[in-house]
Image 1 (cartoon, rainbow, N blue to C red):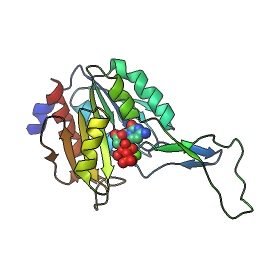
Image 2: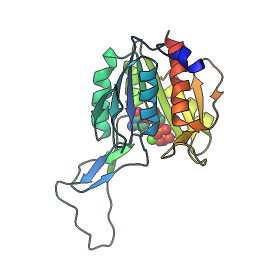
Image 3: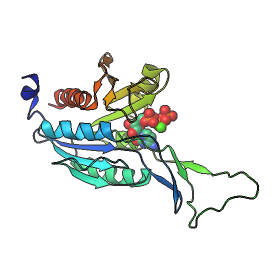
Image 4: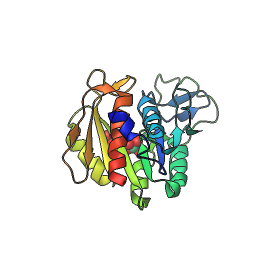
Length: 223
Ligand code: CTP
Ligand code: CA
């Protein structure tokens, strides 16, 4: 019954979600990526559809099938993701950065496959990627902006700093050093930070259950 009452609360709202891990080329056959499975972002897309939203999913790498009823755009690099999210911003009511964005990329990916070095060592020079959540935070008008924070220590302190620095309205923090939490798992245990409220600690539960609670909280904030 509790669930049925939520149906339709996001009707007329456009929710844009990024998910999965970005891929940064090193050379034509190698890349830099991370352990993101995309499950949390895809669960958010499903929960948003259930609650009646129009949903756009900007997806970096994942093995998951495109969710039904969602416009899914596939991208690879952080720069591609940045371009798509910035393009989507004017038409969005809610933007959620659930993607695990590579903080760095190769300054200049090699055009040919790198050969093994005589020296027994290889040094790659990486440059910082744009911080997409911070870009959206600087550009947004009425849009409700949500970010994640994956930490292994000082969870609330670090997450609170990200909320403020990136001008997000909500930051979903998880301690990925804990078993069953975050990267790759079907479950998650998150703490939700918002600007003017006490942190809300949610129990360890399925990512879909987390996603439904998050979307419900967002719908309350924007309606
Ligand atoms: N993020 C982003 N663009 C980046 C890096 C991160 O949009 N280049 C977003 C993530 O999608 C997430 C939030 O910022 O919503 C926090 O990501 P996280 O990696 O936890 O924080 P960073 O700011 O990258 O700081 P650090 O990795 O040093 O903890
Ligand atoms: Ca990071």
